Length: 168
Image 1 (cartoon, one colour):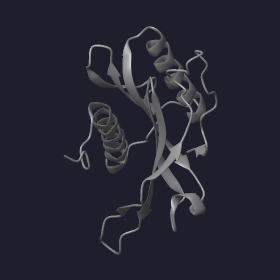
Image 2 (cartoon, rainbow, N blue to C red):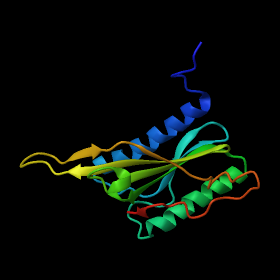
Image 3 (cartoon, rainbow, N blue to C red):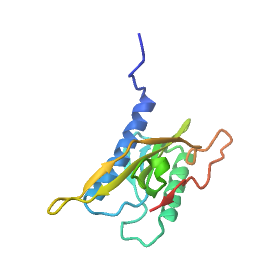
């Protein structure tokens, strides 16, 4: 019997966090709202929720907000009150990485105690014609290997400064 196509519990949890993070970010965009860094977390109890540290009206730079969210999640991981997390933020990047015609992405850092992966969902807003709405165009997901920033490694160390692209 083959395991091909089968997702284990860990993969399912990470895929769910990725989807919730992307849906939340793009949902805010579709409402004309600003996307600021946030986390989708699975608490120690198994409950899933969205963690924010500021409203969209904040003047705090996005890289500072991201660092605050990341540290809050690391504190929860240290207290053993976190099973998994997706750190989500809008970023600007290079077309050679994101794909032809894409310079912006939603960055999702997925992490569990034994796993970390960075995923970029490239997007652009294509202007509509006269009397038409603008359209959201999505590129292909871009996965990147990354060190752990929330759960730390076996020695308790964490990667610092995980932003690869400029936060927008």
